[in-house]
Length: 415
RNA sequence: GCGGGUAUAGCUCAGCAGGUAGAGCGUCUGAUUGUGGUUCAGAAUGUCACGGGUUCGAGCCCCGUUACUCGCCCCA
Image (cartoon, rainbow, N blue to C red; front, side):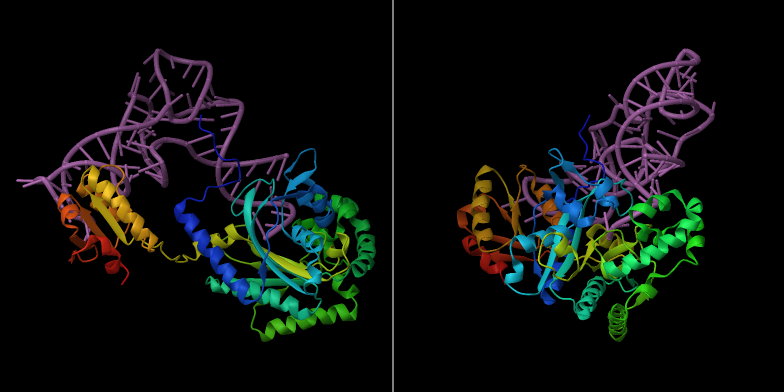
């Protein structure tokens, strides 16, 4: 039996790998225009970082982490906690009071794989630490919008909400739980569990009975202070004037404990049921929670595979990988050695070139050259080696150019 | 953790009333002596997922296992 890849992982074969690299380069380019700098952190961290950063009761931490070495380490299931850890550990706040960072990296979660969801998957994202300006929220969403549009995705919607500060939520939750306690026996099993562990999450239940019960429940928004509401309204007004297509969704809560104020999700078509391509929000208390001097922050994360799936659905046209400039066809052992020396020169001067390594017939070598999309072919045999001259064939039209001196072949190819 | 679907050549799939396997694509070779793309000719490759059962005989029927896949939950 052949050994197979672990469940929920995948191989990126050359064609797809090329596309993936293209996407990553394009993302780097966009992030750079917004003045975000790349950050890379370890693939695994101390388990405690995620427990404290993301929240013990979240699904991610409670049942989806790849933990090893007696619970000491965990493969990172997301990046925000790591970025904040690195920010604190390296005192980045001393370099500049506002840090704008981005990342592209693989994450690991032990979930049942399905369309758009893997156990090892790639996320790219951005984090801004040090500013509570609502315009940073706006820039974040602008950036997400820009990225999707840069890939030709014009039909996405941003769902947006505010979940206020911890204090505001605390006040709300007392009333909310008070209300729910009357219906405790009618709630779904999931919601009953959340009632104690994470009551806010009950808001985005999918259970029909729960939704019915929630109809008359107190609304979080009305428990928010005026300044919180104004912050949110400012964000919305800005988005409107920027022509960004948003939709306020008061039930948008999100699953991670560290969120405060603005939360948002970009929804895209072509993803089946995993239709969130970008998700994010403010996390003004996380830095402090992880032991740092309090600093407001906001970020988003996006699924690279999901982005690629949307592109697939949209029939996005990736650029073709560049073909080779020259294929050297050879006849016999001597010419093969001659060819490899020639290749050494050509490649050194930046020419993408190739030759045969299977001792194949000229016909087969020509076929190979064609398959490799070679722009030119030159055949090296006795004659050519003796006279140091030959014919350079242009594959597109079959025309041949006389080459007086093979040694200076690159002159013809670099035009 | 729970539910559905699928499992035949590298890929996409066909196969039938149960008689030990096929197509297209791809790959490779050749169509006179050293020249591609089109065309033509030919070739290779399968323990028909695995284990058991029924049967004279199973890719096809039954049971189990595993893998993959889609959905629920949750998330990117």
